[in-house]
Length: 110
Image 1 (cartoon, rainbow, N blue to C red):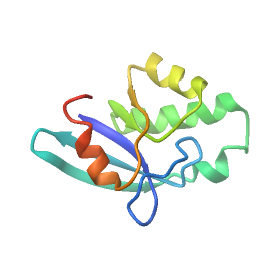
Image 2 (image 1 turned 90 degrees about the horizontal axis):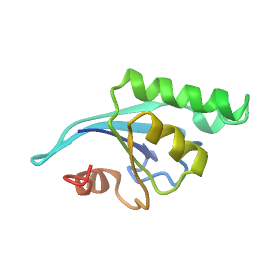
Image 3 (image 1 turned 30 degrees about the vertical axis):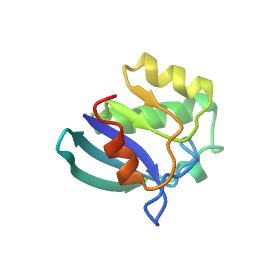
């Protein structure tokens, strides 16, 4: 399962999904994390640079490009949840603490 999680430079879950500065794409399986790649997305700076729709499109493009199947986050607004669910992306909210441990904890629920 390909999971995207917002991360801080310290390796913690960034509480801001739509305003995250960086995210990690990871492959999670019964064996644990198979890969972990971090990307500087800059959604924090880009969030207010246009309309909500253009921001959601930016996020959707990134997720599609990376074949993301699930998003693990602390919180996100209902419009973002709705968009992700319409894309077929599983949304897991309430994540906190160490990002790698939280990602491992999503299996097999995602």
